[in-house]
Image 1 (cartoon, helix red, strand yellow):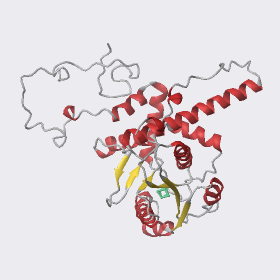
Image 2 (image 1 turned 90 degrees about the vertical axis):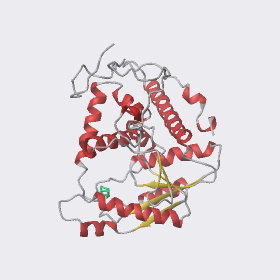
Image 3 (image 1 turned 135 degrees about the vertical axis):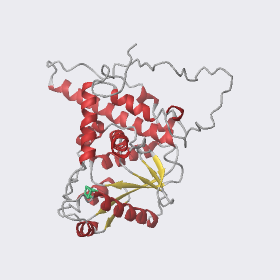
Image 4 (image 1 turned 180 degrees about the vertical axis):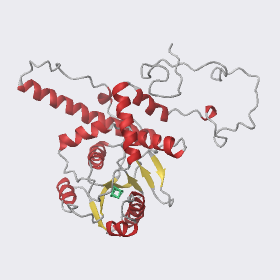
Length: 326
Ligand code: SF4
């Protein structure tokens, strides 16, 4: 599977038009906005197409349940998948599904109205998990863990009933980085959020088509498309404090150290188990010398050096990480 998922023209698209130096006329400004929006759409399609190719997320005959929360990410995911479906090299189906958890104030009419207008097959599952969670979780404790467990079970049941073989979730690049650092800082694990995995019951493939997409682009796309966003605070649960901290840290890094977030994301694609310490991924115990020179072999005693402006000077903001500038 190759090119048709990704338009070559998209990859080559150049930065648009004249810089807005304050002298642009309203017409020029409008044209610039139009060009920028066009570029954004191309970029979103290209990045989703790339994830589909890289991880073989979508195959001929797939019946994909697109999980819709009513947030900007899931709207964006459905929108881009529909665009790609129209020109995809393979035939597949998309069914949008929303779980109405009966949170107080949930505007139950918003998603059905939107999906009807869009003309996409959809299903709204209504299950009062809100009352269960409220009942079971003591006041003041976070409800998310039980709530998401219940939601997962219901979504699998719905996928089975709808005869879907895949579930698409709207997590994006920034969610993936946040999860990586949550595991690193609070879980003692080098573990992220995969673009594709088998569901815990072994029955479905779970895919994340927005794996390469930057959250800022989804915010801009949602504004442009004027998605009828449903607020995610209806349950009254407090935002996960640790995730919030990590999000703030990453945003601060992005501002202070241009390129660092891109490097971090690149690192998730470039793992070297022989240079970590996990015996399950590298058999350190039975490691043998070969006597054969290896151009990629380790230089063992040399200090690593990095040619990157993305990092601060030694120690700054990174605690104990040592960076040797070339
Ligand atoms: S934020 Fe609310 S709806 Fe979302 S997982 Fe937590 S409890 Fe459930």
